[in-house]
Structures are given as structure tokens and as C-alpha cells.
Image 1 (tube, rainbow, N blue to C red):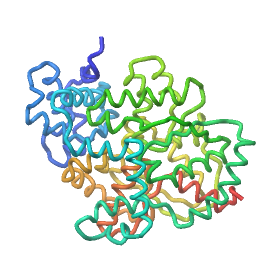
Image 2: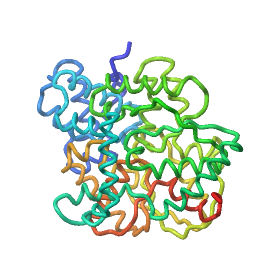
Image 3: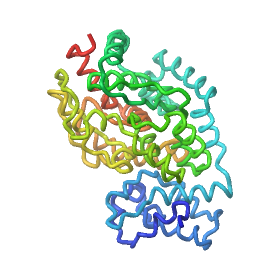
Length: 417
């Protein structure tokens, strides 16, 4: 019999391998800010030895990024992420969530409301003010985050060629993939969706639009609102149907939860849905890891920052590298600790700004030393966090989604003409 996810913690033997993989432990040196320490707190919560109102419990669990960097290094296979969500669900059931959390979820994920908010954000972004104020002023970090969502200037030209490409793929692409649009990606990163459609078309996939889809539920699950996450998951399962075609996702956080719909919903339909979910880099790399069709050369030095929920939660490491390898002259610049969290973690940068900045600053120093022209990452929160951090630090590197770089390469190669 399952215990809502707490059973995922049973395998922990207190070996401590997780400590050096935990960004918050590295930032504070406090055992209670480590996976091992938090597991003890969560076990006490499940047993009833620790109350849901216990200040130490709430303090240290709230400070957890949920990056799951501890899971790949754990020799016992502890499912820390599931245990954390179970603990937060129990706490939330007793005390609710903060007003700030509810406001953020309502603003970012509620249909109608979020559409209006994202339209306002795009209008502000179009003025150029976020880029202007990203490096200074009281609201520089928020301005930097919004500035980081802007696509390249030549996007309009690319869209004209994309119309021909979409017509080609509709009639010639032998395979279909259902596109998941999400909330933040649809609201602020439509250019990444367009790049996803175009690059998939070159590689033989028609990206099919799916009406009726909603937020994936990841932000709700991370906040401990598992019932809300389940309701969203069921809506998506119904919207995408019971076919076999892959569901392509270009947001690591969304993909990680959607692959675990079987666990979240506890049924076979959710399990089948989860098996269909593919990150866009997985689909482009192919089952044999041959990699996508090669593009034209781009003489760029790129630092790849793998999103935690792609590398740790989904175990997707090689496909993004295959994407970069399809771009001649592109050179990957190694950055020590690239696999560590950037501090974004969904709403974490809003709810725990001090810890978020501490984690981010450690990464920024290493990126600065590597001196890339572009920092590539495949998650909206990471793109915004890194973009804002780089701007605030006065470092001129751009942040891009990996699929945007492949799209640039295909455009130069004339694939869309």
C-alpha cells in the first residue's frame, strides 16, 4: 500500500552521498538544509512525531529547491522528489499555502487571468524598458527576468519562412507529435514554440496542436497542492487522448511532472500518458541518438546549463548534446558545476529570494569565468533566472533555449525557404 509518496524515502540509509549534490547544503552547511536532514524531518512528519506547524520543519522544507540533484547520486535509489511533494501536500492540507503562492499560481496559470497578465508583460517587454532596467534599479531582477524572455530580433523574418515550412511538414512529414504549450512557455516564450515546430518539421515531425490542454500542474505539485495538480493532469490526459503519438514538451519542469502522471493520478491512463511525453531534444535526437539533421555553421561559444528537471528528474543528458553537435562550429564551453541548480525552481525565486540568489550567484561566478557568448538551457524559469542574473552582474552573454540555436542554424542553411 502506498503512503502518498512517503514510501519513496524508505531506502535512505544516511550515507551522505547527497550532501555535495545539494545546492542549499552547499550554501549553508546546515545538515537540516540537506536531503538527509530533510528526510529525517519528513519521516517525523509522517510518523506524527513532528507537527505540521513545527517551525524547523516548515523552515527547512520551504528552503528546498526540489531540484532532485540528490536522486542521481543516491546509491539506494531514494525518490526524494516524491517524498517532498507528499510532505508539502500534508502540510498544505493543514495550513494552506501563503497568499503570495496563491496569487502567483492564480496569475500565472489560471486561464483568462494569465492570458491578460502575459499580454501586459509582452507589451512591457516590447517597449525595451525591461532590458534597459535589467542591470540596475530596485526592480532590476524582475526586469531582467522579463527581458530574458525576448526572442532574437530577426524573429519576424523567420516567421515568414516558417509558414512555408509548416505547409511542407503538413503534407510531407511522415510522423506526428502533439505539442504541449503550457502556461509560461505559451505566455512569454512563443518564439520557442515556433522554433520547436520548425525544427521538428525539418526532422520529419508535424507538430500537432491540441485544443483543451491546460497547465501541466507542476507549480501546484511543488507547492503541495496535489489535488489541484491532479485535476489539471486529468484535463490534459483527456485533451491529448489515448493515442500512441509522442507528446513533445520544451519546458523541463512541465515534462518532468507529465512523465510522472501515472504516479500522480495512480491509474493506467496516466501511466500511458507519461510514457508518451518526450522533451523536444529527445525527439530531435531520435531513439537511436543519431541526432537531428545537421544545420549550417554557427561560430558560437555556448555554455550549456542543463535544467534540473531535465537532467536529474528525467535523466535526459545526451539528447541536448546531440542537438548542439548538429550545429557545425558551435563550441560547448565547459562550466564547472553546470549540473547544479540555478536557484529558479518554479516559484522558489519569488518565495525564497535570498536562498535563490545565493545559489544563483555561485553559478554566475563559474559562468563568468568560462566567458561564453550564449548560455543555453531548456526551461523557462532557468532562462529567466540566468538571464536576470547575468544582466545584474553586467555580463553580456545571451540566454537561449537549445532549440532556438538549432532553429538559427536551419535558417542560415535555408531549410525554411
